[in-house]
Length: 271
Picture (cartoon, one colour):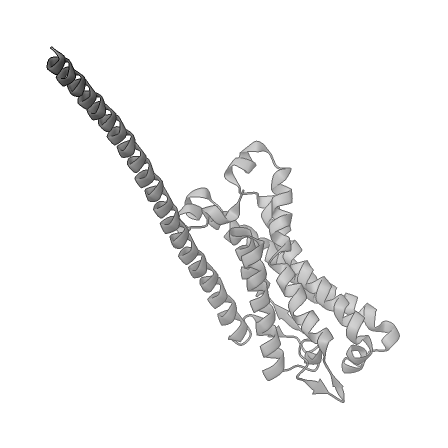
């Protein structure tokens, strides 16, 4: 009897151990599956992030190529007017800002400034000293002010339109907010981008180079700001109108949801 009882106890203990092992095995399996699932999600996110990063670089490269082609094609990006150069290079910068956000827009604005810097250095006009420190005329040369004029307004061209568009969209009706496409916002953003460039450049010229600029244009120093205002009216206002129209036409096509997703802009816009 005693041996039988011992045997039964041992059998029960073994059964309990087996049940415990099965439970532990099931728990371990569940834990392993959870880990695998987590790893798969992490791997998926990494692949998605890598794909997004590659697409983002391609998008910036395309807009950068457009800017460079426009900048270095005679009479396309920069149109000599004698006293200054008219430009339409700010338009792809504005579009890029709306599609890809202010960081990438600002980077492309810097590229815009760099093309201006190069153009005014190797192919100068009488007032190129305001855009590059490496050109001088009649003893007048540029300096740190030239670098500021050349780059700061152009970088802001890639930043300000984004926030202007976001502001207009915020006060738009629900249908417009849902689609993310506002005609008024596009026109306003285009005009804002162009006028950011014109107003900042011309006012910084007055701040840093008023006397030299007056001399280069055969204008009295006392009348140089009037001359600058005339350039803003003759050159800046038409540029702004063109920018508003082209931003509307191009932006309406590219900001459509299905087009954004197809081109990979969906996650950059943030609307």
